[in-house]
Structures are given as C-alpha cells and as structure tokens.
Image (cartoon, rainbow, N blue to C red; front, side, top):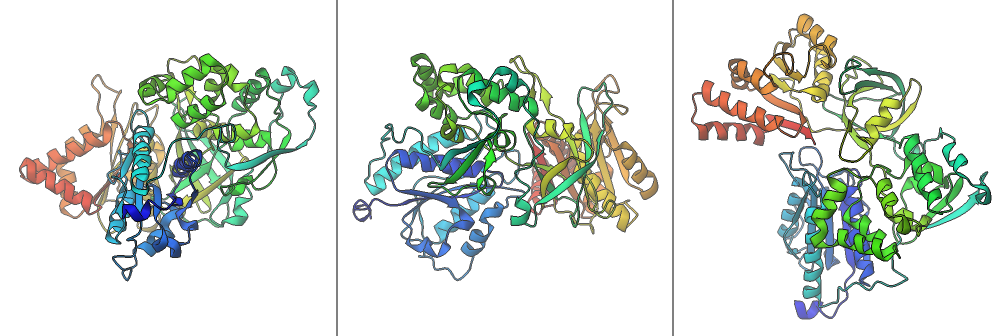
Length: 608
C-alpha cells in the first residue's frame, strides 16, 4: 500500500463536528498547519461535506466534539446518520487513512463518546487508522492543547511515513500567517485618523446593534428575546451574585431538561480597552471603520458576510476575554520583529515551554488583551488581517432552562451565577456571558436558541433530584411543569444545597410552595448555617432509606451542578446506601450503580 500511496500527494481533508466552535477552531488550525507545509488541504463541517465522495477519499482528519449524553454535534448529525446505514459494505472505506481527535470534558460520564463511536464505525467500514484516537480533555490544566499538540505532531509524522511526503514547515513572507479570509477596510465614517486622540477613545459611543439578529432569517430556531425581568436571588451582601433572568419571545416550546444557547457581547469597558491598546501602539484601526470579509479559502461565517463596523466586530464577534492558546502565541511569534519578545513567544510555544505557558496564561486566567499589552512591540505590528487570525470568536454559552413553558408560556428563565474571582493579576477575573447578562435591563434584547439537553426525564418513574446551587435550574423546570399537569409530586425528592438558608436559597418560595401544595419531598443542606459543614451528600445519607425505596420502585437519579467534588461525593453516598439498605457487598453495590448509569437511570449534568 505504501508504494502506491507514495506516488501521490493526497488532499488532506479536515472535517469537524462542532457545537460551540471549538472543534471548528482546532480543525482550522490543522488546515493552517497543512498550508504552512505546502500541502493540499480543505476544511469544512461534516454536514457540509458531500458524503458520496467518502469512498474515494485517501486521507481525512476528523475533529469531533461531544454534546449531551454522548451525542454528536448538530452539524455532524446528517453525516452520522448516513454512516450508520446498515447496507454500507464493509470495504467501503478501504482506501481511507484517517485520524480522529475528540474534544470532550472528563467530568461527563460519556467522555468523548461521539469521537469513539465514529472511530469504531470507520473501522467497521474498512478504513485504516493513521494513529490512535486523540481524546482531548477540557478539564486538563492546559485544556485541549495538552492532547492536541502531541497528537498533531504524531499525525504529521505518520502522514509523512504512509504517503512518503515532506511535512516540514515552509514559512516565508507569503505564508507568515495563513489567512482564512480576505479582509479589507471599505469605508471610514466619522473618525478622521489624523485627528484621533485618547479623548475620542475614552468616549466611544455605545452600540445598540446586534450583528446576529439576521440569523433569525437563516434559521427558524434562532430567536430574538426581550428581557422582562433580571432578579437577584442572593441577598446583596452575599459573596456571589446569582440572577433569575426572564426572556420573552413568541412561538417557543421546550421541555424540562432543555437548554438555551445565549449569544453574549463584550462589556463596553473591554471594548474601550481594546481600542485603547490599538491607539497606544500606533495601530490605525478605529471603531467606525467599515470592514468587509470575503471568502479566500475557508467559508466565511454568516454573521461576517455583510459589512460591519470594527466596533461591532470587537463588541460582538471577538472574545476579548479569550485565554490565548499555544496557537495564538505562535501567531504572535510569527508577527514579532522584536528579538526579546520573539524569543519569549517562541519559548511559550515550544513543547518544553508548556508549563511556563500554563503559569503565564492558564493559572492566572490572563486574557488576550493583557497578553497584547505585555508584548507591545509585537502588538504594534498587527493589522486588520492578522487580528482576524489572532482573535477568537465569542462562543455561545449554554444554560439549563429553569422555567416551564406551561407555567410561563413564551418565556425562558435561566439561573445564572455571575462569575467573578481573583487571581494573582491585579484586575478581578469575570465570565464574559454572565457579566453581560447581569448588566441587561428590562427591554434589552438577546439572541438565543433552544436545544435538547443532557437530561431525559421519565415522568412515569419516581425521581431523585440533586441540584445544589444553580444546578437546581433544570429541576425547577421539571417540577413546575409536573405541578401544572399532575399536581401531585409525591414521587419526586429534591436535594438542594447552598451556604445559607437566608442568603442564597435560590427560588426558595417556588420550592416551599411545591412542597406544601404538591407534596414535593424537599431536603436542604445549608453548609454554613451551623458549626460543621453539611452538604447534599450528608442529607442523602440521612435519607438513605427513602432513596433506596425510590430506587426499588424503578426510580431514576438526576444530578446537576459543579463538577469539582460534589458529583463523586454524591455517587459515593449512593454506593454506601445501596450497600447498606440493599444488603449488598461492595462489589455488588458498584455493579448496581454502574447498571443505573448504563441504563440512563443515573444521569448527570455538570460543569467546571
């Protein structure tokens, strides 16, 4: 086979399945790497690919994210359905060599499940692995780069070996930074670049546009909603600000367990800081410049197909809170002409410099604006084309729906913890989306869409619900819905946890009412209301007999919340109570819980 392949310079096809854009970003990085090596390459999402061409392909690199309970991303589902057809011959892909990189989160039980299933199916159809599947983990200190960087290095080595081609980088002035799009400034509106000054930067006008609004014409699932309520659920002096936000629109239906994806914007302060950095480094790019993005080698995102001002792009398209990855630092290295900065950037992109990169970016959560400020000579060399390759798009943020479409028609409610914390850096860190959501006032608009979530609730079975903190959101949705249709919630038990009964008991009145009027079994753990800390696992221990009775009556367990310690502590407690009340051995209890998990009777939805 190698002799036949060695005579060819194959097209390297890169296909991705992406939910929020990360897999697309990684796929485009591999495409750029191929271009830098002078190789033929093409990149697209799996559902845009003509699957009839699959039997004739020689080389494909797949980058696949996993969603929900091991589900493939939305832009891969059509491809996956076709690949599962039972009448496909076992030799269909005998000419294909492939590599798969999965992007996942190990806090979920079905870690990288979509990538693993794809790998198994390709082998069944006769394809040949170039290398072992890569399983990148968002929970790693270095994020997905911890797996991606060594994986892609081996990928190129194996391609060189199998196809007998050179994979050395051929960096020169032409391909210094590989550009995906043609980007040009087509118009200046009000600002005269000759008279630009710091006073103008400090008095930027606030924009009231939404560049994603036109997606509603392209996709009926995308909606524009109006904020009707933004209520704090924690008392004012509590360390964390949590909001119950109500978004109203027309013609929406959803079920308990569904999620809503929100399109956030950068804060006005961050936008102002971005343009200040450009101004201070002599880069003549201004908010009112009209930018045109057109196709060069990669399909232009729909949102960029019309002319936009740079101010709109900075506020709504580029993520100013983005934590630069190794590839970002490499692009800055290529741009840099300052010896000291170039040497430092090279160190941060080298394989031996990954711990240093972690200490510089990941540990203190340093964002792209702070990195640009730290490398002033390099930043001064940037232009509009290079900014499009260095900056990263804002990814939509998913939130569990906390409301019932029956109880509050045409309204979606979300329970949002406003992310804010300190690191060793001077300025506090914050969550881009949560900070923006907290700032919204009644009447402000939000672009969003609904999607099936992780949970699959069986209303015919008893339910054990564990939702500390904002993890209670999907269970509020479920219980409000069932109270509207069935009234009696005696076959539901809810374990809720927070710090203080009077400070951060989210939606307290709802749960008290459901307990009093609808027979919900409600048990709370208020960890700081007594000398010793009490968490949900301790309350589950106290109610062990009740939980065992629910499980004996074919009850299901649903858990939502932070992925750090709580999920494992709760699982350990269920192992203990199953062993105790079921009179099982430790091994039998382990098999019992694993059986529940395998049969979707123990479902989790966690986040970092």
